Length: 75
Image (cartoon, one colour):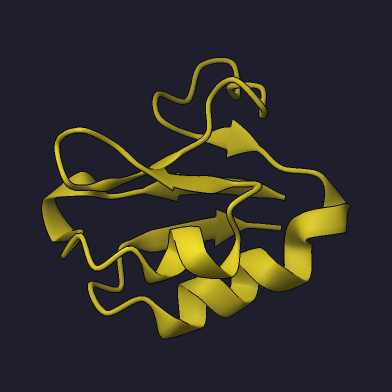
């Protein structure tokens, strides 16, 4: 699964980081980000990261509950 966050739509409520802290974190800018140190970047796709299938369910849950509808996934 590949995941990315469209920063301009992030509301900063942090629900994604609460639901899936293995993948998402809140940064100093007050916005959610993919935990880059834990997930490899997709070559040629800026801001997109490869996420293990172990986290697929929680990532999809975070996406569904995102207030800003800014979490995108590609299966």
